[in-house]
Structure formats: structure tokens, C-alpha cells
Length: 386
Image 1 (cartoon, rainbow, N blue to C red):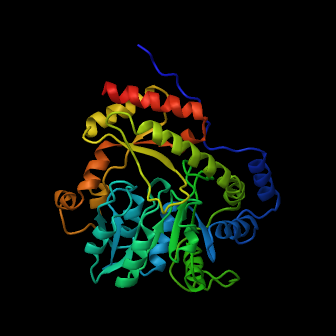
Image 2: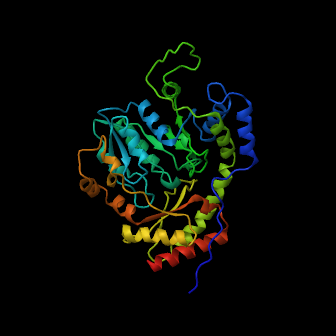
Image 3: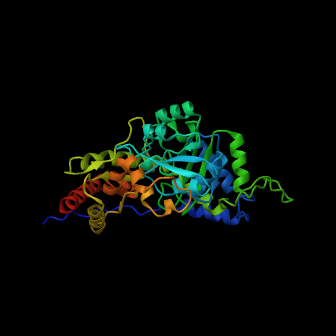
């Protein structure tokens, strides 16, 4: 039997002398937290400028970024937040930890991002925020979501944990007029191991967020005059120094991923049973956080076996996210007044995608064109064997 040759993928995270120099710079400035150092301030300016936002606030991680943003948008006990049913659990837990009910709605069958009609049907007088997730860097329908927001008066919070550097009709994430949250966890498109950021379109909300992320304490306070309730979500200087370098190479890496996904998706599409993720064409620059595809009808058990085969053949493969309402964590606090099966009935696409979706780590898309051919051959061989 002909066994496809294993590709040679770059390691992740990537680093060079730039990160070393940044860490030394942070070390030698003698101040290692943001209130005395320069690295976090500099990173926030650079990240905001890169994404076309008025303000950026760096925080401890992406989950905290969502939680802080929701709090600043008025989410709390008695309110509801609409989230995609197919997403990483932080999207819902950030709302639930604030005392709000997370309301899962179905996703688009091609982009795997929030279905706008489903979101519109879920809006109630208690809905405080609608949270689209830009799944794998393919952006949700921001035109239709902006109209829904304007029609209902419910603001958007973009979960952009997968969308560093992405653009919708030429506009960067920070130019779309809504709050956006990012993650810099170890697997993300730029990373310091952990970290997060929130983009704000207006100064008032940014200033509120700054207070809340620093225990409610003003920048120049020397008398412990905590003005509002908050927590310590401050990013440290070492992480910011690393992120500044990571940001500097982001666009070059995204351009490579864009080209490789164009090739890999063309190679995957003819494989019997395989359906690659497809972005809305208005996402004119996707960040390609994952290389995602479905094998419709395969079932969860066989999908998991397929992932094992891919890993054994040398691909960094993973099962797609479990529907959030199919996890125990979702039901622990502030869950909707419904059963998992009742929500599933409203989310047929999520039900299917969560059982038949596979994703490959984005470092696959930093490899060579030849490696894309090898990757597709391994997928074809593994799918045929399941």
C-alpha cells in the first residue's frame, strides 16, 4: 500500500532574536508591570493601530477579554447574551460568569459562524449583547449583523480570538464600529503563551475598561481610591514585549496562510466525503486560524477515529468544537430554561458540524506547497480508511 509521505510543518510558537531582545528590554527597564513599564502601553498602541481601532486594552487572556468587554457593555444578572452554539466554551462562560444567561443559536453551514436569522429570532427584551465568533478567521456576516444591531438596539461584541489581522470588505476588525476581543493563548496566530486584548471604538468605554481591569483604580492613584468594582486583569511587561514582535510578523504569516489555504482547500474539495470550510467572499482577508473541513454523516465516533488516524500520519489534527450545550460546563450556572435536546432542535447545523468537523492547526498553512499536496493525500487516505 502507498502510504503518503508525512509533511514537514514549522513548529509553533515561532520566535527569533526579536523575542529575546524584547524580553531583555522588559527585564532591564526595571519595571515589570504595566503601571511602571513601557511595553504594554507600546503594544496597545501598535495593536490598536494595526486593527484600525481607537483604543486597545491588553489583558491577561482571551477569556478575560470577553468577560471584561461584556461587563463594560452592561451584561450582568438578568440579561442575556446571544452566542454561537458552535464555538469554544469561553464565548458562553464569559457571559455566564457575569450572571447572564448565554443563549446558543445556530451557525452558518459554510462559515460555521453565527447565523444572523437565528440570532434575530433569539433577541428578547433581556438581550444585552450579540456575540459573533469569527470562526477560524472567516468573519461572520458583519453587514447583516450591523443591521440587526441597529434595528434592535443590541450592540455587537466580536469574538475575534481567531481573527487577528482579518478584514471584512477591506475593513479591519477595529474599523467595524463594535467592541472586539482577542486571544494570545499559545496556539493563537500571535502569542505570548497567554494574553488577550479588547478593542474599543470609543474613549468612555475604554476608560471604564481600564479601571475595571486594574481593580477599579485610576492610573495615577496613590491613595487606593478604587472608583468602581474590578479585578486584576493587567498584562505583564514580558508578555507585551513578546507580543510586539509577534505582531510585527503577523501580516507576512497571514499572507502565506491565505495562499496555502487556497491550495489546500482546492485539494481537499475533490476528496470523496470531504467538504472544506468556506468563507463569505466579503471576508477579503482571512486570518486562517484553523484549516477546517467536514465529513458529513461520519458521526462523532468515526470522526474521532479519523482524527486519530490523521495524528498518527503526522498531521496536527483535532476534533471540531463540541456544541456548547452538549457540555456539562454550560449547564452549571446561568443556563437557558431549556434542555440540550430542545436547543439542539433549534441548532441542526451545529449538531452536525460538531460531530463531523475536523481542524488542522494553522502551522500547517505555513508549510510548503508540496506539503499541502502531502496533507491532502493523508486526509484522503485516512477518510477512505474510516
